[in-house]
Length: 302
Image (cartoon, rainbow, N blue to C red):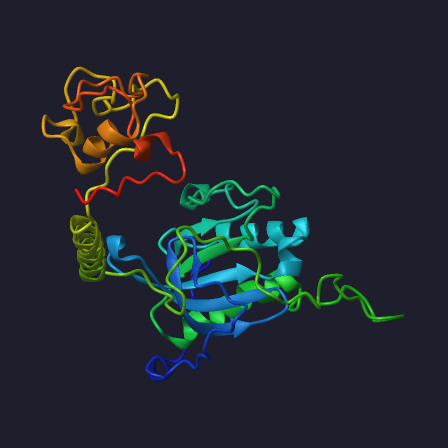
């Protein structure tokens, strides 16, 4: 069991220097939201973090392997060996590829993100208890140096070219998926007040949209249905034809001037084309109706 190395009590009150997060750093690893950078090396990065609000916002120190170390099976095993030798109260949680075995395999947290289509697994990480002391920062550096083999003493005299890990230049943080995605520019989970206000605002916008739709379609004039397209409808009834039994207004009992003139000027005995029984005694068509030119009958003024 390894615990934090004993340090001078006078240095416990010293402030540990941290640096802000970089654009390549994930906002969240597992169930811990990252706050600042504590230590960085070729093997990985140590962050100061805090857990989610459901667990009481416990401060922690998250160690995330780099992109190159996460792709090396030996580096993953070295991290798992260092974590399994720690005290059970020091390790808060662990996750990533190859971190679910060993004595502290019970601290493994399965990812709650959807299955990635590319099949890549998350980078190994571990969350340790953090009290803000230099001893905790020194412990993070010691673990990362053990993964990088930086503190390994040479077994013989150095001869020939120096040995270098193949992934020593791939220092970007390893893969850490986040679900659900946070609000852009915000690296913390929203509280219940923010969620309540967002729901109320969404309901207000929905009610406003419904009200606008009602006001737009309420004043629309009614539209008559279009006529039938198949042509089966019967046409409206026409007025009485000239050959009907009811007399027309022009065919009243009083003879018109044109009709009176026809009695003297045209003694034709042919019946009228309209076939109506007028007051004309001759029964023949008037010169105006026959259309003969040169008729002496004056036009009717009625």
